[in-house]
Length: 194
Image (tube, rainbow, N blue to C red; front, side, top):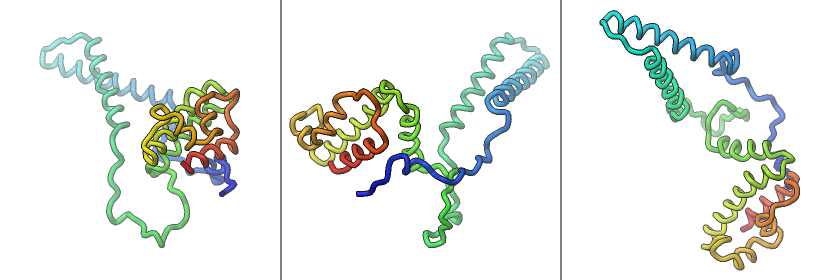
């Protein structure tokens, strides 16, 4: 059994490289650029409509253009990453040992799915009980379902015997404080034994 804590697993000593796609100016700059883009498109539409002799309410035009900009942002955010070219793959033997932090992979998404809520919960018992404890319960139920064909709800007696008293108590009764990283690592180790 390894004595590695969850903090050791979720931290990295070297600084992550800056993302090249980040724009300067932060959120205020992005909002200003979006508003400038909306204004430019509205001006062009008004001019074009007047040239052909049509008049449309300015409010309707602005609402339509804003809606298009929002849809464009949502579609861009939900788009899958571009496929990697076949020649871009590096053979396993030529790996230089550095992590490509800009790459979007399932492991990083999974780690972030736990890292952010764990960091956010910090020392807040209510947050931990609302966010993390149900996820751990779902993991326990899924492990029980896959390996033994039951869940905590379907067969509580057998589930308690399989989970053990410590893990059963942890999952069924919210604690007064969030567990320490060492305690959480021990709980995860017990989950893995199921």
